[in-house]
Length: 476
Image (cartoon, rainbow, N blue to C red; front, top):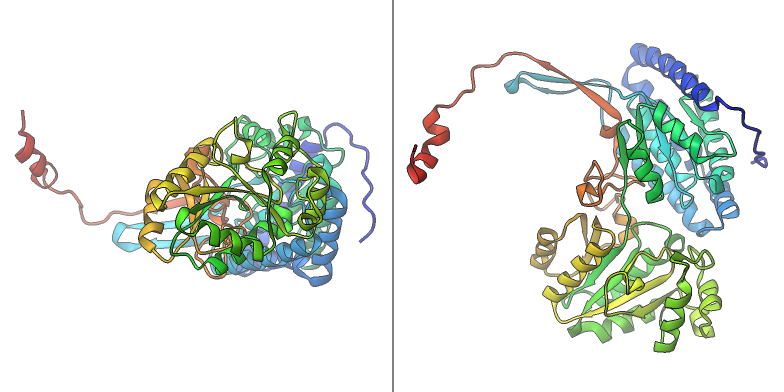
């Protein structure tokens, strides 16, 4: 791919993009009217192919790491392909225009219609996969989308958008269905985009998420991740350790779904640590732990020298021995939770906090406390053979997703062996101030018109509704 040059930006760029998007939507609508759902599905497939094609998946992954300095090329290739493939599978299985549901017994017919121009705020950790993921969902609903990447990721997102536009043009659709803010991207420009769009979908910093809520437009934001995962007494320890390693080390822990803490029950604690060490985990000593805590944060912010970097960077910054540099991730024991114990929060690095719990009940308590401090609503996990424990964890923990015996990073945003929708945007419900308690999906990008016809009267008697109450409490 050619080197991306950042053009000079004139004022009024955002209104021009919005106007172009609306014109493109009108042309798209005419083609949908003529060709129906197959045309939408061609558009979605074109976007998927723009990043899934092996050579492009590789080059976009390389550009992402070159530009942002975050993560691993091999992981980003996998993300570009796996997430896109899974999302395409989900989207091609559903109807998203015209009549999408009929319920004769209720006299209801539901029609899906576009929401309009979508403003998509995307993160530096996923400068290629997330824009394509959101664009696929937006076009599935008949919409246009304008991508607003962070300034430090623009040069990685621009070739991604160019690829989508080229693929749309190849199949005879308006390229302006997918656009990107011109560089240099500013907060003022992004704010204006949110204010002029019809729907805002924001993935990234909580500053951007909160700003999206202030835009005056419907906004779907996501919450902070800080995933705690329990290793229960009945867990297959070697399998659990392997899944945790694969998940934690993927893309150097850039994912909000990456394990940030393990809560291991006392009965298997030592064996579980040994299993994790066999998978490449390095347990920090007490003195090393002190340096990690001191250097992982600088002025209250995560140290960019270790965020999404490999074990060698951690070993260098934390002054760890050669054994740590050749390890896959670093484990640090912790007992406290909260602001005074920063290891209990999200780390976006190959540092994994480890807690010892008395039993499952105590492990569930620790898990909830971690989430109450940071990450409530997002997700947690458990490795166990006791489904009663898994169900109990789901019942007592305020999260949207509880994963059982899975690599959290791979399963949380949808998997081929679980039923969650493929996405790169995880809603956290009102627990973290989000409008959705689900994985972002195509239904978020359509409005529904309800055709309502009469049915035989469905009006129960007063006795049917109030009888039990009257009997227990009387009518007085």
